[in-house]
Amino acid sequence: MQGPILKVRELRAFYGKKEVLKGISLDILPNSVTAIIGPSGCGKSTFIRCLNRINDLILDFRMEGKVLYHDNDIYANAIDVVELRRRIGMVFQKPNPFPKSIYENIAYGLKIYGLNGKQQLDEIVENSLKKSALWEEVKDNLKQNALTLSGGQQQRLCIARALAVEPEVILLDEPCSAIDPISTAKIEELIYQLKQNYTIIIVTHNMQQAARVSDYTGFFLLGELIEFGKTEEIFKAPKDKRTEDYITGRFG
Amino acid sequence: MNRRVINRRLDRCFKTLGAISTIFGLLVLLILIVDVLIDGIPRLKWDFFMSFPSRKPEAAGILSAWVGTLWVMAVTALIALPLGIGAGIYLEEYAKKNRLTNFIEINIANLAGVPSVIYGLLGLGLFVRFFKLERSIIAGGFTLALLTLPVIILSTREALRAIPFSIREASYALGATKWQTVRYQILPCALGNILTGIILALSRAIGETAPLITIGALTYIAFLPRSLLDPFTVLPIQIFNWISRPQKGFFANAAAGIIVLLFLTLVMNTIAIVLRQRYQKKVRW
Image 1 (cartoon, chains in turn cyan, purple):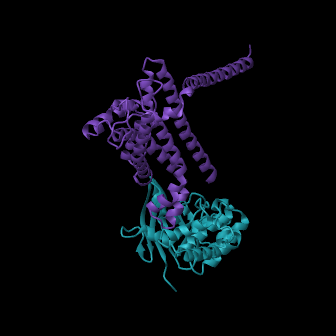
Image 2 (cartoon, each protein chain N blue to C red):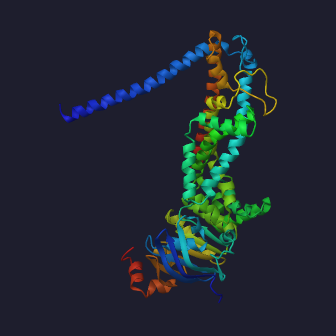
Image 3 (tube, rainbow over the protein chains, first blue to last red):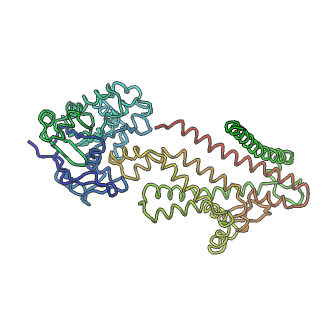
């Protein structure tokens, strides 16, 4: 049994004066899928956005506490944020492909890292698209602008783009909230397969989705982690009354 | 009379009033253009473009003026573009948003509205006198660059601001640095709008007379500049000069010069509009 890949300790996050995370502590195990559930505004997006420091881009964001990645504090001064984001990839709520070709979308992450060999790029682009189950649909139109794809395809392209740079952890911030059920099913299938090689953290407000895809589940409420444990246990025998109320649909 | 009838009449009144204002504006413009065309078109011959100014109106031309305009605009663009785009990128993407940058932002917006003759005085004091550039093309180019700089900075910032935040997030999340994000994602997306802003700023500068007269650009130049340090004249100054002459012949020359200047600005504005439209069609989020 390997130790946790990510350890979050007493994480508190603020936008301006508003405290959105009130001391979160949890461990993420490698090659597992962890689902973060909770009603809107409970801080679940903020939480995973802390894990690759993408929240640094928000002007009045501030955090306290520690996030340890392989036991290194990612908020320490010595940490190279660029390298961190390369190791911890992210897919956002709304598909956000670059307004470029499908090929360029995936090659970008490699090119900025200095990879330029055409053959090598071709190979990685193909592999990434295969991993994200998009290859068959787009293999003849790689030069096509990514914005012409459907929403579900765009989201799978964003996953392929994240996979291309070979991250260790993938953060999925409500990846299915803006797409149709069929694409959602495809992405869930994909998550299941990716688990072999990656550590996945997925934020979702869809409880069935959490139950289907995840090994561990954390329930957030108003900036607090109410309960965290094996998905089975959370859904079958929640210890906290509020968790039970939420997953049985009594609120949220 | 009941309220409904009054309302309907008011509505009709306003409609008529609006139509009259529109027609008035267009009509005046039309009369101006037709008048200029009638006066100027007979003079628009090859010789007119290829002759230096002269005491005799029939022999006078705009050679030194349009060559001077080209030189000055080239210098202006060379100085104002890198500085303006650079400052715009810095302020929008790099600078921390605090009181100081806020203050700078407000002042740039104000500078864009300062009367051009003030820039002329600044150019006279700074470039002509202090840096001893005399009444040269380079002094004129620098002065017009100062004038267009705020406009270019503002339009660059606006173009960058129009790029959705999600594109930046996508790029950073892949481990891109700030420069890579700006260079490969944001600038290409914003280029159409930035170019539009630049062309509009330059097409304003091309018609500027006051600041160049203030720095002492000559009105009579019977030679072509050989270096950036040579004296110069530009189209609007040449036109201004001809209009102030008593002889009737120079009037036709001025009209012809105005046609050329109008044509130039029209072409530049058209390019700007085409660029903007093509860009808008290509990218949609």
